[in-house]
Image (cartoon, rainbow over all chains, first blue to last red):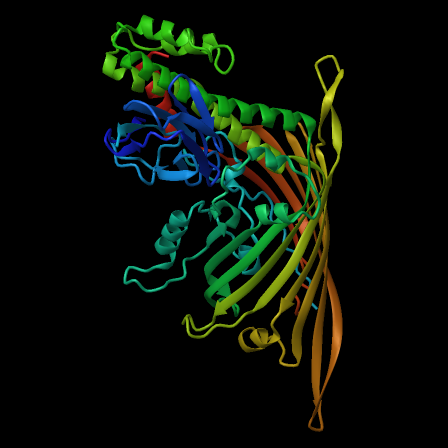
Length: 122
Length: 454
């Protein structure tokens, strides 16, 4: 099965220069197991929250690599909530929000996926 | 009274197992569920949707006719576990190891709702009509998981988590390697870069990484390295870990020791005119099974005790109440207009012993029928409760000749008919043969492995 790769320009965050951290939270539903890696081997498992970067700083982009499965054969659903401090910037749900290539196949029992977040100066 | 003894010798039943499951004959056993039991239908397969979308598809496919009219499918059953349909945010699979008694959480987790249908629900000698069965069952005493099974399950859970972590981390490292403009692409350089990462020998072993890269074709281009490594890793690691975890998950759900108890509730609804605007309930029932399986010592080749595991012996007690609707019986199955069927009370015992390839099960059920006889005398109706009892016993012996062949012998007596004593003795020798070859998924995996030179 392929790696489901989201469109490069889909997920964007405008940096506002505050002292807040930009974080990502990984939540899994319906019995899905998942792991997400990014940057310098930072790793999240279901329920984890981790700092991505600071809100102050230069523009850039970060690629996230995910791996998931549902051992009981049920629905696969993984949400990635990006926050600035306590403020939720957006939630990206795999595979519900996935619009990349190749198209998602519901028969894939162990989907691998990737998405990128672009950070731009406001 | 006529006592009829029917003996059936050498009843060979050859059942065909398709290529879907060539490894076991377990799939050939007729599954049981309260909804099917209450309408006396035996289904070959139960549809078990695990998402709302799958439930919608199952209902539309089976209960919707070509003209978008509602139909009743024959010998169809659907069982739904509502727990699976709830979001279960960040569900912890280790919570399946809980063994507390009468826990609301365990009852909710094991609750299943079922619907069964038949077009051959007998109301007279040979008149079959549409009927639906509705059922619910849950476990209120869940037994305990043996220490060995618990350890194996925890290890399988950890392995699957690590397989996901490895998949995500290795792909992330390849991204970092490819994004670094100073990197010179070669498979050896990618391998060396991954082996230099901090997670090696903590979350992922170097030998696992080397095993993956040994299988990467030498001519793999830069833009193909990620999907190739990803697919090899899945075949070597992730899919195996997922299958092993699933096997351990099934094991800890079913192979428990100590006291277990389940309760079942079922309600039957028949459509004597085969029209949906007229229905009548023939019966409903409530029953429970209480079982006990002791622990036994687990020994190694030198007969040293290395641990404990559930015993090969299991004892099960059954209690059941079936409430027959006398209006239904008198209207559609009249045996005697002065006779009104009442409740049936069943009390049963079953003992099962398995030893290597042999298994033996002895079952006895005592049934008490409490009926009412009415008489009209000078314009007044008089009634009287009358008890009658009947019993059923079966001895079942199985011998597993091979994974695909089981020889079984049954001997026993079924219930007497409620209208009279029609004793019957049943004896049957059954040979279950499983036919089938490699599963499509296995073929696909094998082809993929050959393609990758594994």
